[in-house]
Figure 1 (cartoon, rainbow, N blue to C red):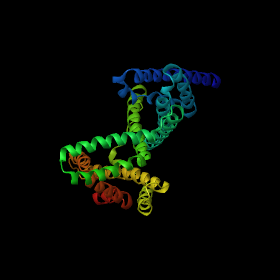
Figure 2: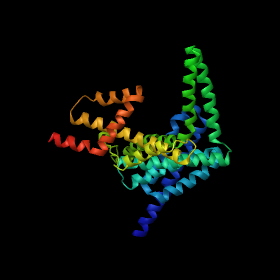
Figure 3: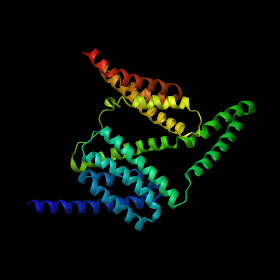
Figure 4: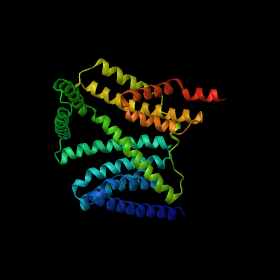
Length: 323
């Protein structure tokens, strides 16, 4: 009986693997050859990898990834390799996390790491195989954007002295852009993981009635250790101000990524406070909108709120006061 059961499981893995690989190849072809649908389909590319590794685990998922790489090279040319690496690695990380029944936010964190690794793989593959120097491309793009912005500012303001000062400040900001590429990769990985995980939840719930969903955002809580990374990053950016130093580049990227996570913690506390105090649901939504409109002031306040919530357990105090 065990042998028959094992054979059935093995045949199901092969069937599901062939089906999911076929679905991925169809989505890939749409993404590559249908421009208007390509952008929408792009975010669905990891879903077949998520579904398969969610059902069968890591080792079969890795085999599916290798099969998808080989077949995508045959069907959609070598230029599809970066897409397959990005979707496959990110999807595999999320699927394995779901297979191991991690929580929604643990899965999001693991998926973010997967997509970050996928982006790094794309960076290396395009540079090694296609000769694309991303640093030079980004610098060229920055120079073109800066020249366009400079021309617009001179036309709008008409004040040469004021414009010159603004242009110098803007130029300094443009120069820093290549230094924060790792942070941008991390943020892109987080966004892609969230969208892919949300889509896969919808599909898995419909197919398997699994009841998967994200926990309430108000319950989002980072480990306290994130504060140490944030403060160390901030301190090292003060100590070492050489923009070409490896330590400075590492510190500024750690500072940016942890700062973003702590800001999310601050927003989560606002949602939690609104829930406990039974305030209007418009309050947290309005706080997000105002922060987007006035980031230079409000983002720092939200981040401070996140630090206090993590460091002094504001939610526990609210619970005690409620009792």
